[in-house]
Length: 248
Image (cartoon, rainbow, N blue to C red):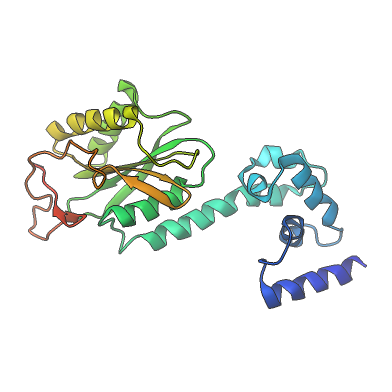
């Protein structure tokens, strides 16, 4: 009976994908490679009973997943990585040859990274003077970035990576992408800290569930100062159609 169910499920997925499957059926199907001999339906239901939704299952830690009866160790290791794999693919797709060129592409990038997170996270993207991404780092998790220590952490990372420019992004789990007064205040402070270092703060975006607010486009961004060309080699580097400037 179990083998027959597996075969029917595989045929169903082969023909129609997973769109028509219930959450427990998706989990049941995902567990097949890890539980080759036993029925995976009880484990799938136990996962949903424990975590409440498919999304919560994929956001659960390895240790938490192992608390569910019958959950294989390899599946518990793999499941939390699936969303990171999807995020990696989405962030790669959001970039144009490793560059962020405007608020729209920045929003795609940040939404892929943190737009669906359940807690607030702040991420900084550090760029070369040609606009290519050097690295992306999480600066804070759980609370807004507004303390001197956290702000100086961003400045320190910019110097350590030899970045010419920074774009900040953070998510609002509530779904409202309107920046708070503290968001605007901390952004202005970060810009003032970075400017004497020769690092341009290009933008700060608030993202959630595919939506975004660019502080540059929204007119709340007041720290773009007098900076000369970011690209000392002569190739133009623009963000949102404007030449960005720095003395670096």
